[in-house]
Image 1 (cartoon, rainbow over the protein chains, first blue to last red):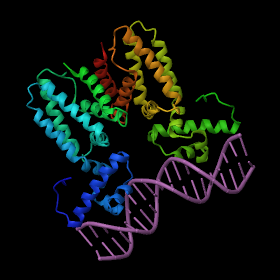
Image 2: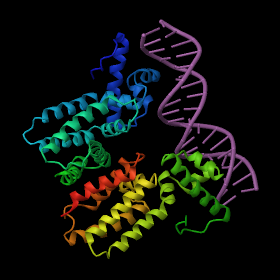
Image 3: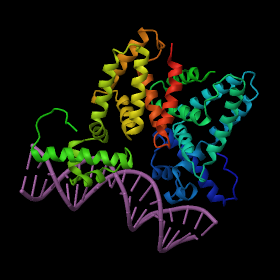
Image 4: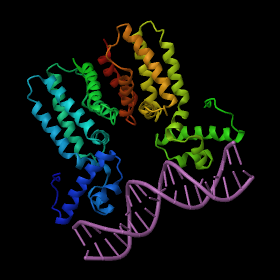
Length: 189
Length: 189
DNA sequence: ACCTGAACACCGTTCAAGT
DNA sequence: ACCTGAACACCGTTCAAGT
């Protein structure tokens, strides 16, 4: 919702930006992360080229739409860095990530794509999530709660895999949670 | 390669069928499981509508191309039903599935899609893989090697998720194997 | 019976023209 | 500066016409 702070926009441009976000959110929820871009532009009452001007790639649009959710996850993670049990802190955060990923269609795909971005075109999203996950994991490993040979990358891959695997399943939240439990049993020191 | 036994085909139709399989295999390897169908038809030296006639969906083409590989996996699984350690038998099979999935682009997607097919349009592939996995899992559970609360569905979802998650990664085979090891640690009784 | 290329529909991307 | 609709390219799907 709140635009990442860049240079100011003309009033009409800003309004279009916000309409596009709202329309995209609705479309993603309804049709999934591959909803037609023309559809989104039309719902927003805007030319399709305007969509493209604001969001050069579908990925950029996805991240903008779910920015708040992703930031909330990162914020939660920071709070959990002072949890009494480091291992439990990580577990709680991972459950939240999976829950979010299987609720918002597209979040899982968004995170997955962000993880792929190895170049300098690194998305904003990757840095934030990666940093949070690293802090939580290292703390849990130092405390001896989680195996030392697990990498952040593996961890996030796996969590995204769970979200993707349960995408659009009946009872996906429960399924996702069960799979996560299995994973966690394998992660403990 | 060997066509599933249906009614006989005219000589030219059979030749086209085989050319399409070969062209599709090459295209999938080169461009991934979403390789353009027109491309495949052109490589096969065949009209695009002919491709569609033989394979009504992309899924059908994928399964036909990887039929041999999938059958080999099922065959391996049957052999492992007499392995001395039931748990080890399952583990060996799962490793083979993941290895295959991260080698052949499209196999993971193919299996995943097959797993989704809940209707009567159930793909051939789903039945075969599902049966093999069930036999191996139940044997391992009866022997007390693997937790009793794990379902076949969960197991296959997870394995596919690993293959998908490591798709097109550098060192994907090693990555996939590491993730599988984590999973297996969580599965043991 | 089977094959073919052309036609159609759909969607993403770019661009010249408007304000 | 920013917006717009039209143009273009791409790909999947269908169909009338051929053998």
